[in-house]
Amino acid sequence: MAFPEPDPTALEQIRQDSARGFLGTRAQALITADDGSLVYDLSAYDFLAGPAPAAADPVLWEHSARVARHGLFLVTEGVYQVRGFDLANLTLIEGDEGVIAVDALTSTETAEAALELYFAHRGRRPITGIILTHPHVDHFGGVEALLSHAAPEAPVLAPEGFHHHALRENLLAGPAMRRRSVFMYGTELEPGPAGHIGCGLGQRVATGTTTLTAPSDAITATGETRTIDGLEFVFQLTPGTEAPAEMNFLLPHLGALCLAENAVHTLHNIITLRGAQVRDAKRWSDYLDETLRLFGPRTSVAFATHHWPTWGRERVADFLTVQRDVYGFLHDQTVRLMNDGFTADEIAERLELPDALASSPVVRGFYGSVSHNVKGICQFYLGWFDGNPSHLWPLPKSESAGRWISLLGGVDSAVSRMTVTLTDASTEDLRFAAEVLDACVFADPGHSRARELLAEVLQRLGHGCENAVWRNEYLTAAAELLAAPEDAGGRPQRGRSRNRIAADLGIADVLDAMSVRLDGHAAASTRMCIDLVELDAEDSARAVHRVEVSNGVLRHHREPLATGTTRDPSSASSSSAEADLRVEVPLGGASRLAAHGLAGFATSGDTQVWDRLRALLATARRGFPIVEPR
Image 1 (cartoon, rainbow, N blue to C red):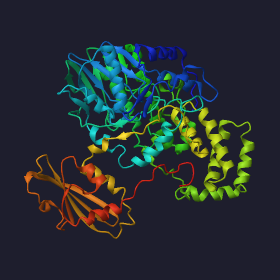
Image 2: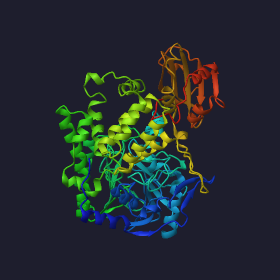
Image 3: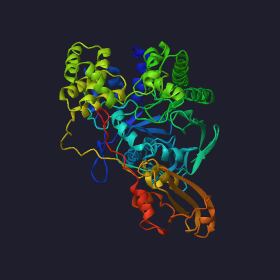
Image 4: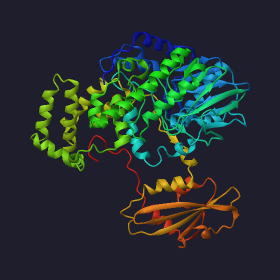
């Protein structure tokens, strides 16, 4: 939908809020890894200080300029935020003996840089507690840097289910999500007026080293309290909202409310464009209503793990009310129209927010959008099928494209028609041209003029987007169609992420990942049975994971053993079949098992069974095509 002009008074207040409390920033703009590769460039978006060009939506441009502000900010007495060093914020709350950190950014490098900025202004002090609000990597990936500054007994708090979801969020569908995230976040786009101007939620996801730690304490119910370094925290669990495990909290003595990522200065995603489990819009709205009722009267400032705070009890109440109602409206009206027989595409074109919501600058579609959120809600309830049997069994696009284009007289004819159409094209013309030219590329991927014209259309659509991730999607696709060469220059090369999260995987997680890599057809006639014996710190068997392959499926289950049992776990198996191979897996050895075979593990039986299993595992295709046939 097209949003109206934002309320000027509210917009001016947000302009002031985004700069309020600024204390200073890092002198060195480049945050680099130990090997010199670029992790984050604080100066990359300095161009946003200028006026919006024709190649950018002016509302998105101004929003990105606010988001790009980087440095240390005072939220309220004893509460500070480092913003603009990563996609998310690092919040620091001063206690009696040290400082409590809320979330940890994406990488250890950006987290360390943010901490050092805080220390430079407030003095070096130990981290006396860590609160991880939810299991998305931009909120926990830098935790190892925080732990390196932590006091010995500093607790690590998180909502119930955090560790499970942090490990599994991208484990099974990780390769597909990572490839699609290149488009959503525009990770290969260069910052610039015609290129990358942000992600709406933040400017850019940092690269660097991502880590994970298991929480030492879990919040299991709303209303639970904890005292950390002399400060009382009151928690609210909000599972199934922006993340499957998430929590807000209140600092009663300060009237300071942390909203995690449940309410930020943009409309958020019910379904992300990179792919994820669909979020529950109704639950999201209901939890924000609970937040308002539980904490609203006691709150004088609300801050989140992205963007800037909102100050004043009445303004916080208004902020939460609009956030609550936008998800409630989208849910209820989508379901109403769905029950009237409208399809997801039709509802997405038809549904508009009421003026009171549409004119609010805190729910503009910079990150989520009304269009794709509506489709996510329909997906949540009805799935992919729109009910029309003509759409039940369509040809794959790689097969149907040529047939459609032949009806237009071939690719040359279709491209010629679209060239004429685009002379004074409306947005609707561009959207239709994208459909036709996309079919041309799928029908003849080597047709250079079709690729060039589709890239032009996508660039024009992207440059007109108020939504940052839609812009990134369009511009990344255009760049891939044109096979743009990598930019050269004397600046440090932007690094790749170094993921250390795999070291935290348990045996069951590793086996789940292996199961979705198994080539089912190649394994269809294979039968094998492997027992993985899980050892504790004293090398005593504590469980056996039985792995069986048959009919092209890898299945596994865990059977715990009494601590201190003998090394032979065969009596614990529910199957009477003798395992072809037994492998003793020492504590912490699961990731090595997946990555390096059986070297260094004690085994009995036929080790070639493991080799045959590994030979049946397919490797995910990196960088698979998205805007042309696979």
